[in-house]
Figure 1 (cartoon, helix red, strand yellow):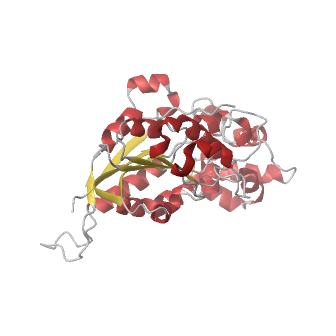
Figure 2 (figure 1 turned 180 degrees about the vertical axis):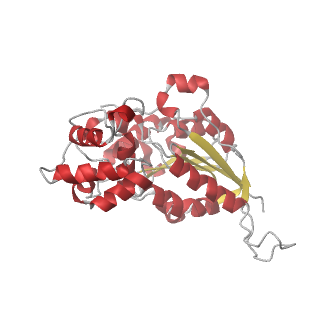
Figure 3 (figure 1 turned 90 degrees about the vertical axis):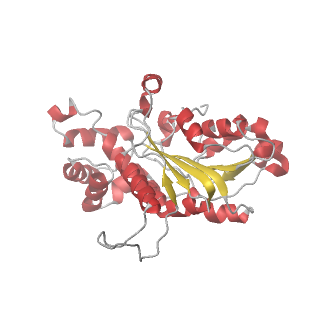
Length: 336
């Protein structure tokens, strides 16, 4: 299946990066290369793009899409196993392959001699390709797909393992906290009861279990009953919130003065983390409000550019319904 992905909030992201022709930019979630392609079109001969992704299909697609800019592209291969080197021969010495994760962005960039960048883009959504490829197990719309959901196919743990081995209390916790589903307790109870009869192996089997745990009148008006549970399992499996929360400060530290980080989120849990972190880095003072001057010594790292998140336009919503929950937030590093 051909890799395809609609880059959400593309124009808004590119505009807010304030791209410098000779700058260094990192696309931390490369995907199909949509954001990267537009960045590269605006870079001059001395500009540079570094791409990071943990999905093998995304890396292959981006390699092909960005080949006309091969002298300005470094692809950082995150979580990809056994990639054929000949697919990258066209890049010659311009391509750097590093098996890593955007969680290790700071260390990996230092390893290739990059100590500061002028912009970082993160698109935290699941790609259209991942959702539309049944064997990846991300979608609840395919009844016979395997329960996988791994962003990194080197990981041993899958969604099937979580569904069949997590305790009822742990299932309840992740569905409640990561799926924000008010029926989390009943869903967890139904999953445990069902797996005692036989192992749950497909999306269709899990869908029927979740459906039985949610009242019919709620199912009739509340969207697909499996949506929140699938989100919860995917977040737990891929440590999505931990990776984001633990690495935002490092990414801001990587920015050169005047550099910007643009992050597109797709659900409230991600958005709250980004909003809170940007606010903290703009105003890190911990002194009581009654203090006339700051004595804690914490210094602001920059400015929140988006006081309110940027949302998709009506036109984009019509063309790509999956963009409806997207929010873009932007932070700019202080000039020294």
